[in-house]
Image (cartoon, rainbow, N blue to C red; front, top):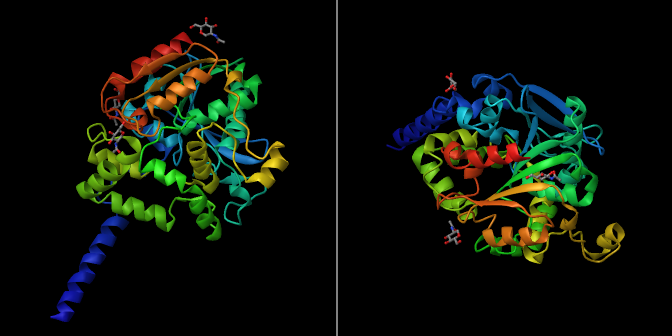
Length: 392
Ligand SMILES: *[C@@H]1O[C@H](CO)[C@@H](O)[C@H](O)[C@H]1NC(C)=O
Ligand SMILES: *[C@@H]1O[C@H](CO)[C@@H](O)[C@H](O)[C@H]1NC(C)=O
Ligand SMILES: *[C@@H]1O[C@H](CO)[C@@H](O)[C@H](O)[C@H]1NC(C)=O
């Protein structure tokens, strides 16, 4: 009896592992790279290596367009350039490319397309990972914009960011105001600068940042959720277990942070997402967000008073000066986004010096990730993006 049971268990384990190995059930788009997805949906993709002032090497994807000028799109936290193309024909990138825009999709340091450096090895010690989204704005976005200007010979470009992809814009434009000349218009999807109005459990978690930070440092965890690490693979295999994986990981867990919207991301597409998301980032990136939430200020990284004083000449980190952000911006937010909450977007609006275009998404349940992944972005979101691009 015992042997029979053992045999049955082994057979089950084997067949499950085989089906994972053979990728039988995985949708094709979960396994394709950015460039392969571009090909599949009708566009050839060029890959460029962009080197930042401080030596990080980032992949910048380019779909050549003749008629409507360059547009750069920037992804959020734990995400990559892939996020804007995995919806295939419905994705933002393919939509813009089909309309004749010259489309560029960037990556920030530390994600799967940004794990390279001229001298530092991401797998050898913490040095490579000593950054937060501050550096992603100050160095990475600057380098990507400069590369595109140089490549195209244009004076200025338009940009689109999602979530942390908006944060890095506010950082670059406030710390290096000359970039207000290089970006002529910016569309901010689910904007994140202030996180003063988070609700539990996220607000509770952010308050625990000193303990979480200590734990991560003590365990030497500088890189979070590396692709093909045990943690990342576990998320992917558990969360893509058919309908149950979808119900637990998307409907139940993710909705806590993103806002509850079971409609716009369907189980099959959830498996495509898991082939691309999450990807790696640094410990300090996560901690920096928590610091902003707890301090209720949009500030630089808090290293603790001793190092703060050395770096900033003050015991506390300085605020980003949003007065310096003078370009045309179109903010698009949603009442059901539990990360980028409307009250926090309102704080941002009062801090920015210029009159902005502002739109709140109409479908009641539109959430944080619907801005990149919803099945009806073409109906509810793209009209605002396209009209803003035209105005800029
Ligand atoms: C994408 O759209 C194009 C043009 O409408 C169509 O020809 C193509 O078959 C679609 N591709 C896929 C994979 O659905
Ligand atoms: C998201 O926030 C709203 C309040 O704005 C709240 O009613 C809702 O329960 C939150 N969703 C989740 C999944 O926590
Ligand atoms: C902002 O947009 C308006 C049109 O909406 C345009 O007239 C103006 O020149 C733009 N300003 C900048 C700084 O690009």
